[in-house]
Structures are given as structure tokens and as C-alpha cells.
Image 1 (cartoon, one colour):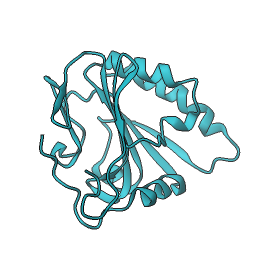
Image 2: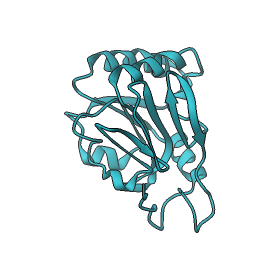
Image 3: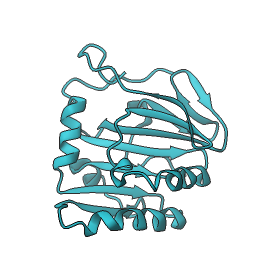
Length: 188
């Protein structure tokens, strides 16, 4: 699989983490048809919304009501299996592709129904100074099961994972790592 390199001018990983931490709001996008996932995420972020020390708002929105400008102007996390593809994003600008045959990543295809792909703090192709997180998979059940498995961990884990990418099968990591940080190889 050939991954189109991130264009020059993208933020560094450190800058993306700073943008995420300093953001007044974080957009969490889910597939409109997946009401179970929406309910789970809403319950997951409720304690974060209620923290007195937090000056951040979490905006949960279905892909049906998502505007491209919203995705471009703030840190965003796409969570779920989007039947019409990841909203407003060209998969060729991401380090993986997903289709009905599976998750294509690093010259491999992950085809099991329980396979999940997680990308954290990647330059948003619509605005490379803003971080984008993606948690998707080959089935809605796999994504929800993975989220349920991490619920007992730190609440920030969904939002700010320290790993750049992970492939998970049956809630076990198959692949994990970080992207290159040198200028000539950044985000590969």
C-alpha cells in the first residue's frame, strides 16, 4: 500500500498534542446509524464534561450533521464504522485505507471482523495544524467492544493515546508504533 506523504507544513507530533490539549473543544464524530456507539461515547465523555478543572467541551456529532468546516477548525476524533467512508477525508491522505475487504495498513490487509484500526494525533488532511484521531474497524461490534475494554482506563485514553497507530484484533494489539519524526520521513 502506498501512502501519500503528509504535505510540507504539517505540524509536528508535539505541536499536534499541544493543539489537542489547548483546544477549547474536541469534536467526536460517530456514524449516524450506530446509536449504540453514540450512547456509549456520550456516557464515556459525560464525566469529562462535568470536571470543574476542565475548560474543554466535547462535541458529539453524527456524521449526518457534520460540516466540513467543523472537521477543519478543531481537533477531531472519528469513531465507528462509516458506511460511506470517512466523512470529508480522502483515504489516500491517511496512513491506512478501509473498505469492505478489510483494513489496509503497512502492506497488509486485516480482514477479521474483530479487527480495529486506531490512529492518534495525526495531521488532519483538511488542516494539518489540527490533530485527527480515528478509531474504526471491520465491524461496529468490534469498535464498541474495544471501547468497552478500555473504559476502565484513564478517560483521556480515548482522546490522547501516546501511540501513533494500532491494529487491534479481539482487543489484543497486533501492531503498534509511532510515526517517523525526521523531516524527510515525517508521518510515514
